[in-house]
Amino acid sequence: MLYTLNIKNTLVVLLFAILLVGCNSKNKSDNSIVRPEVPTAAKASKKILFVVTSHSEKGDTGEKTGYYLGEVSHPWNVLHTAGYDIDFVSPKGGKAPVDAFDLTDSINKKFWDNDVYRNKIENTKTPSDVNPNEYVAIHYAGGHGAMWDFADNTEIAEIAKQIYENNGVVSAVCHGPAGLVNIKLSNGSYLVDGKKINAFTNEEEIKVKLEDVVPFMLEDKLKTRGAIFEKSAPFNAHVVTDQRLVTGQNPQSAHRVGEATLIELQRLNKSTK
Image (tube, rainbow, N blue to C red; front, side):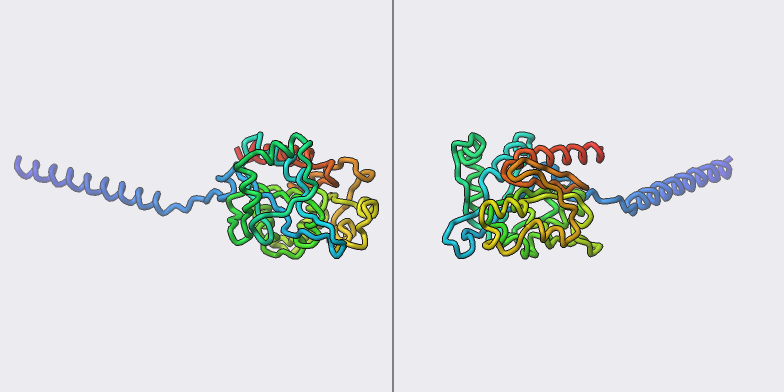
């Protein structure tokens, strides 16, 4: 009888040990599983980066320029109302020069009277301050100043590339698409290559008599990068969306650029749920 009990006890101990080893192995196996990491940009689903110019002179004309206020305020109003938080970056950082300062426009006034955003645009981030993974979209505001300091800014181009390749949205309005000219994707192609796009047109530049002042004609430059350029009559609103790239032709298009950007973000949010 004692012999039988010892065998039973031994079997119980062995069975318990086997179960214990099995559980530990399972836990180790679970811990070793490599789970796909959710992109940081997807986690920070309510932040958008606006790009504004640091340049304040229209060539050697003696005229002042900067970012066009309505091309910031109108997209901002659409996106801010929808719950997005907006940050601002400029090539040089700090206070950005403003053009077309018209507070009779109620949206301009709403933006300018907002202490939080007034402080942000008067203390813009430098490109080195920006983590692209925090943003689901980037918006290039226009104003003639953008023609001098957007196209060749490699740091902001890299930020835009990363946001786009994180499945984010890139938008631009009027002269803002100057920032798109030299954005290259990881496959070596230009961002705008093969995509429908628009911007301030040759006709519009001629009508404002700055075709000999700006460093290049924006419509022509975008076409050389492979863009499929669309446009309306001068100073009519025109917005194009193609493959998460949203562009508007002129100041009259600013509100609709904000709306089109929001539609793209909502579409992307649905597709990830």
